[in-house]
Image 1: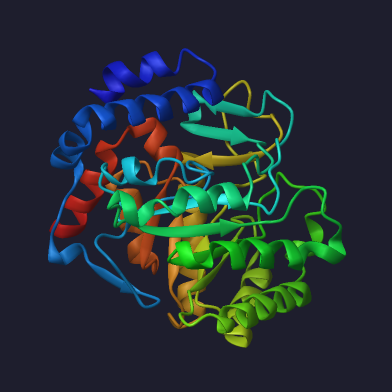
Image 2 (image 1 turned 60 degrees about the horizontal axis):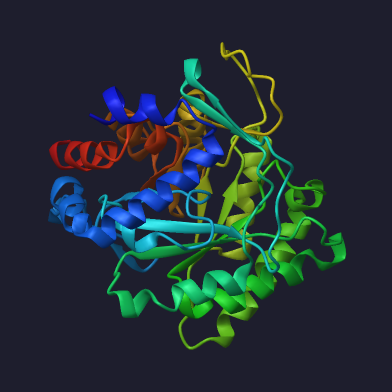
Length: 341
């Protein structure tokens, strides 16, 4: 139904406008009582789906990647579609508008998206206010907090941006992701410097120890890293003892694309990343002897795509572009495939 009727209608319109329209529609339908209907259709409960990763028990291994619910406005409603966890953000200390529009592009022939959103979000305090309602709403979904720096922040203040987001969000999320690999923010080079990453992770870990309950901290990496750079990531994890890696973010490469708008600037997501991100997962897992958890994301548009990432060494998977192209039925199909694997 989604692919035959709903998607063709939504794809007529501007993708960013459709995103906000869809949010409003899901919220309205949930208020009208359709949340229970969505749960009955899409949620799959089975002990075979449960995973305990970095100390958290996940009801199933299929999550929603960061970027979809940037401001934590729809986590309860989205959980009705069967996600095992939802990652909000990327959140920055201050609200920012992001890059000029138009900044989101569908590559229909490639089943992909290019975005140069630029961390548009309402700021960390706005996210906190929404997350405070989490316990009151009865939403038990596991939530990750994806954090980054403001675009205008000077390099010497990057760490402070991450710490501000970390400290504010700490009581309200279950795990953290340091987003250092988004291609749509300025002064990106420092965020890929191994020495700086050691410093950043160390400072965030120090802040974590101040709290009574320590939250897992993960690092999100790009899919375009070569083997030498991936070896450095493995060494970085060993040195810092960070809790895990998310592989991977969007790509700046444009290999084998056929859509007319393939040269738009920004990060590429969707089906063209499926094999690339899976190979990154496989390399990290094999060369680290499986010594740390990996969340696999990138190009999951089918059950096979998800199973490939799990077989390559991912403990959990996330979808984003596949959710847009395939609809919420994809989550159910993946979970059923995992049960039957």
